[in-house]
Picture 1 (cartoon, rainbow, N blue to C red):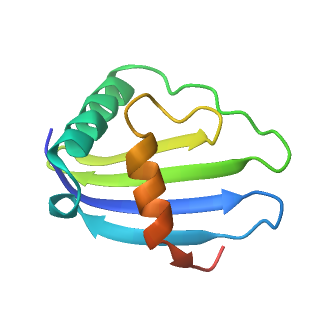
Picture 2: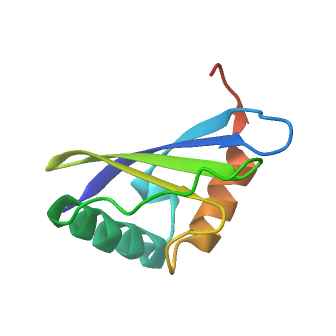
Length: 100
């Protein structure tokens, strides 16, 4: 599965702000892309993991445009998948306020 575009959305937290960004897969490292592709493949073949809805928890959504269609990943700050923390941090730094 090849990722073409990544749409990032961050919401929640104490202030409840919604921020987002969009990036090409070419703009992230090869290691980050591979980790994201592995997670996307496993998500397509398994039921999605349960996401905590704890109060004031920051939520992350990644919508991936791939050659096999769209894949949506959602997790909170306490359950960021292994290997994706640096990518989530990078995408969060690029994010700007968006409409909810």
